[in-house]
Amino acid sequence: MAMPEAYITGVGQSEVGVRLTRSPMGLTKDAIVEALADAGLTLAEIDGVASYPGKSHGYLGFSPCGVDEVIEAMGISARWHFGGGEIPAQLSAIAEAANAVRTGQARHVLCFRTVYEAAAMSRPEEFPALRRDTVDGYSQWTAPFFALSAACWVAQYAMRHMHRYGMTREQLAQVALNANRNALLNPAARAITKKPLSLDEYMNARPITSPFCLHDCDRFTDCSTVIIVSAGDALGDVRSTPIRIAASAGKVDRWSWDQAEWMASYATGPDLWAKTDYKPGDVDCVQFYDGFAFFPITWLEALGFCPVGEGHRFIEGGKRIARDGELPLNTAGGQIGAGRLHGFGFAHEAVVQLRGTGGARQIPGDPRVAVATSGGGPLAAALLLAKD
Image 1 (tube, one colour):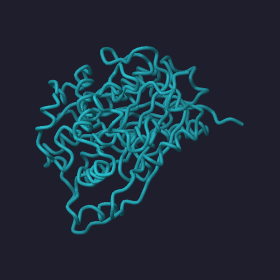
Image 2 (cartoon, helix red, strand yellow; image 1 turned 90 degrees about the vertical axis):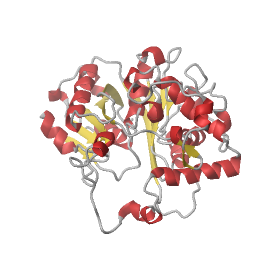
Image 3 (cartoon, rainbow, N blue to C red; image 1 turned 120 degrees about the vertical axis):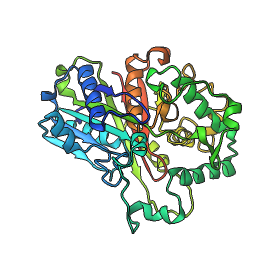
């Protein structure tokens, strides 16, 4: 017996800003209202809620709203809920929601990711960081080496690619330049990207950690993004264009490596294609996690759009990944150009493109298939989305 289908039926997003004063729950409510209106659903029809990674009590700016709080604030009667960080990566929360509706545990699941990092950093008296005397969990593998920023360990992967395969900074720059061009066409990105970026400006920008400069890194942002996942037999409830979740995959690796080798994306890519009849050549656009500019290069290789070690050559010059290129990449600007929405923004933009509602940033033709990813380093997740 074939597994029932799961669809994305609603998407919503709050204001995207830096150091906003509207509360995290206020931003979440804004995104929920927009997603419900998009799907044509009411709160009474929502019977599931999912998020990643749940409320972060240690640092509220990273994840200020828990699933239980959203259920309470919105008056949701949930038959199923999920909120935790011990899954492959951010978009795995959407994959879990898809599994819930496929197995009859819910009909319409509201998935959200709210970030408040820029505002929290500007108001530490309201969002104090947790002070601890000991280090445990995955931070035990990074904090003792002063690698508190992911930039420190992601850079090791990038430097190995440079050493092993000859990637140059000029090639790496194409991710940031493409993000800048697309973000300038995205009204929601105005708080993040305000002017064009040239290659010279990129090459002369402040270094962060070799080989990354300032423009290779996403920016802390305040925003909430909501994705509604519905069962295939519940599509009669909605009025939007449903986008099918054709496949999902994810991988969690060890945090305790002592030498950077392969990111978890390289195992996730083949696993995604093993779950579907679609192939890389069927994909019309890709929305790849770009917390740092090197991540999309690894996803290009991992998902078979080019051979391993050839990702930097695939994007050289930027034409292939442009909005009118053979594989449009991060059409809303990604996190580098449109803000650190922490993964959910890529699913949101994939739906926008497949529905043809991208406005000035809409890719040509009639896109039918997209891939959205999240994570890098030891964790990764991917969604294959299709317009039937």
